[in-house]
Length: 305
Image 1 (cartoon, helix red, strand yellow):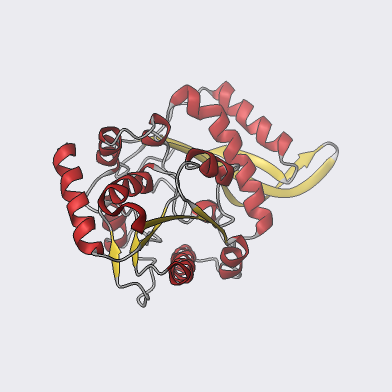
Image 2 (cartoon, rainbow, N blue to C red):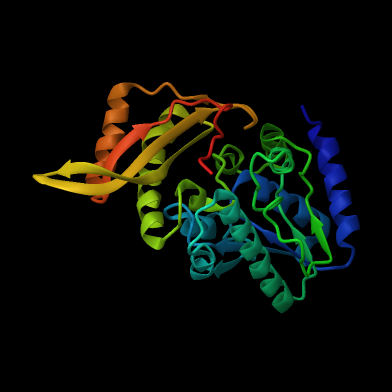
């Protein structure tokens, strides 16, 4: 368990020392990691912190509107870069290549914004499992192994880099962040791109965004899972009405975990799985079938890519 008071004091001092008199841009996604970083940095350097939310076009349904509402009382800059990210992913099917393309695009967008705003440092919410999985070769997180080697920033600040997710939540509580933020499910930095197997297109993202919303709507309030979502696996055959179709296969994934390093599948009643599957196939005409993933971590990872 982390000593929250000691950590907060130390993190504020570290940010203040590393930033010096420079202006700092930070990626604010609305999740607990970036929100804790924003709270710490705001205490450390005040209005020299410039929070930026990048709409990558790979976000959950209604996410950008939600971010505007929650952080409406701070000077948050919202950047619409959806076409840039979809363009950067064109033709890429390898999961690692996708993560690296997204990581590089994030940095390039932040470099561009920082230059306009006179900022020279970048602050991000990297946590310890991100580093373990990237450095251990499990997968490259967009903010660690997926980052480009050359960046125009003088410094990259990562004040919560040594914390696990449950420890970040403890710090969020000590900082009096809203419970909605403290206990919000993790969402991957590369967004819905890692929930689409193979090449990412606007059509596939639209499908998985709607399926993901249905899964969250059905499971979050009732089960409070560590994480639940939908993933688009590929194409399969199906029948709708009197017609045979070639449609998408959607996987439902729901797990419980303490720190994200291991995870167990949620025991969901079969009747509820049937209802979720029915909603997805009814509301999304291009979906042919729905499956439920029962694999723990390990051997699987929580996300598909």
